[in-house]
Length: 235
Image (cartoon, rainbow, N blue to C red):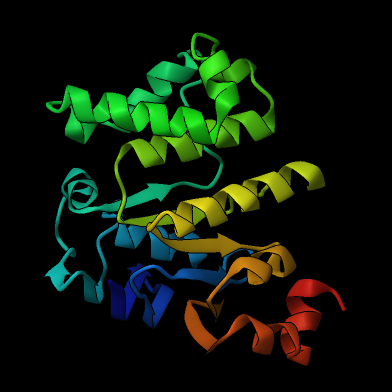
C-alpha cells in the first residue's frame, strides 16, 4: 500500500536519508527502529509531504505522493501523528480533534461518525471534550494526537514515537490502542525507540541507521538478533 523506493533527503551536504526503500502492505503493522537522529522522523515527514524528497519515489496505492501538498496526501489516505504530539494547548480537546478532519470539512455527517469512533476508542476524550488540551496528562494528550490523526480517515497511519515520555502503564495502553486501530483495517507504520514493546505487536520491522535501512525482518528475528537486542532492547 505505501512504498518508499530509493528515497533520499539532503540538507546541504548532509544526507538525512540515503536511498531508503521500505513498504507497509495492506493491513500490516510495520515498526521502524532506530536511535535518535537515525532518520525515522525524516522518513515520516517526507512521506507525508512536510518535506520534499531529494530523490526517489513515494507511492500510496500506486499513486505518486512526492511533490504533493500535505493536505492532498491526507486526502489520499496517508496521515501522520507526529513526534511530540504538536497539539494546540489552549484549544479544547474537541477543537484539536476537529482540526484533523479539516480536509473532510465538507462532510459533516462523516466527521460526526468518525468523532464518535474516536470517542469509543478513547472514552476519556468524550468526557473532557471541552477541556484545554494542554491541561491534560501526557498520556491523554497522546490520545488526543492519535484521535486527531484518525479524524483524517487514514488508510495508512504514521505514528512517530507515540510512547515518548509516557509511564510504562500508559505505554501499554497506547500500544493496545495501536493494535486495535490496525485490527480495524488501518495500515500502521510505527517509529519507536521502545523496541521490545513495538516488536511485540508488529508484523514486520526495519532498522535504520545513519539514514539507511540496515536490516529488515519479522519481529521474532529482531528479538533474537544479538545486535538488535544490544542496541535497542538492552539485553
